[in-house]
Length: 282
Image 1 (cartoon, one colour):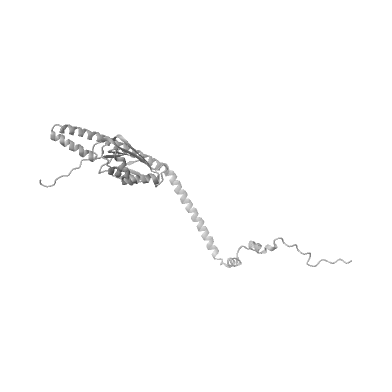
Image 2 (image 1 turned 120 degrees about the horizontal axis):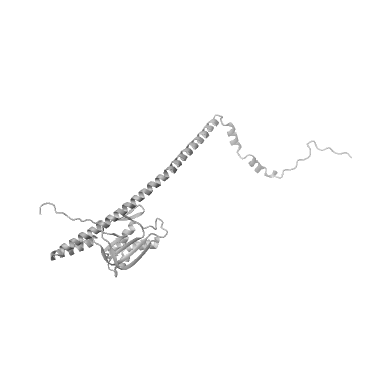
């Protein structure tokens, strides 16, 4: 029996397990399209130095920017203690000025009371003087030149407990509340100890509310002297009362209103005498 020689080409090669995935393998082996590869090979060589220069310029610019930022950060770090020191000194000066202002207003109120007592003692000697004193008392009550005591309404309003921008009281809110009290029949009103007169301004200064150019902090205590039998109900029906109630219901602003048998509304310490002069011959 003759043995057959193996074919010249040798034994058949084993079939690859992933031969059926030739398309996927080709994509993995050649991820770029042939057109891109040809374009890369045919790109002019002079473009390569230009790209290298651009890369060097980008790295240099990044280094310069990093250096400048480091210098700025170092300067801010060194100047921070000095800025904090100036801030503390400014706060101290402001507090000292507020203290001096409060002291001067107290002295002014004491001197005004003394002048008023001397005036009353001088006018009480005659009947015409007594009538004039009664007239002065009524005018001083209306203008806020004297302190007033009596029954009335006490309203305490404050920002929302978790106060965001909408839950914070503004100057217009305090204006509406005060105007509602005037409409309801209040005879004298004060806010955090500041008497309101026809010359008083309620304004906003940044995030603070100022009354008579003095910055106030919440809560705001509003005292209004008037008839306790009608003042609360008339205030609730006024546009100012409804405005504040809208804030309470929709923005969680806090407000408590109570009637008091005796309230003290101080005089306006900044009030000054103003009178008209007749010009020309009489």
